[in-house]
Length: 252
View 1: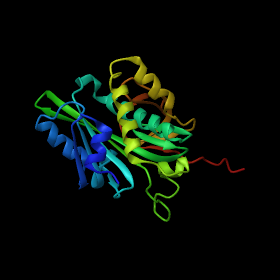
View 2: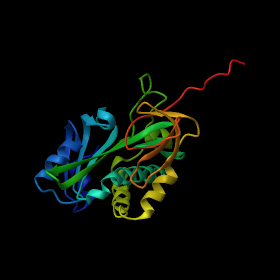
View 3: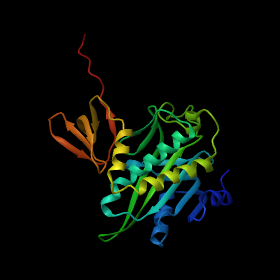
View 4: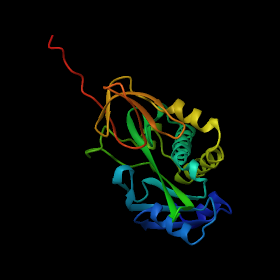
């Protein structure tokens, strides 16, 4: 089990706050950011009951079964959309280091093994008027969550299931932080977008996003999905759920 002593050994001198249970590590990190937390500071929780996911969805973290962490950052405003790219790439690299295969990213911010969700990333910015104070990068990874018999069975996966053996969460934390530090240093260059784009799987069949139907053509440097609608118009979409459109039978 993770505890403050073990975390200190893993994180060295990096400032962190550790909670046995909290509502949301992002919420705690935003509060710490308001108080002046140093860049790179981490908020971690063994159990998270009110974590925030994309589109206002919840992300619960059972005790001892996942990684739930949020990092305090002070990016430039133009780099905000690229934070989730860095977080997703860090988790993907960590998963492969642990032994997972078939790791990919699903637009806009999910990490998958095969077609099942392994992790999610959510960045949130803190503004005072028109001045960016900073941001937090939240990452949640299923390590040993048991999805059998749940509504998510077949749609979500844990890293231990993907790897086929028991994993040390403190080692996983060390890996994901190391990779996050690396990719966060690449926010203003081409390397981040190229690596992210190579990992994102765009479907080769028609999709629907936010009520728009068409084909996913490409991804922008700012993380936008470029969707060619059935009407022929090209749309830039920054968030939403990409849903496959059902195949239409020709009646034969």
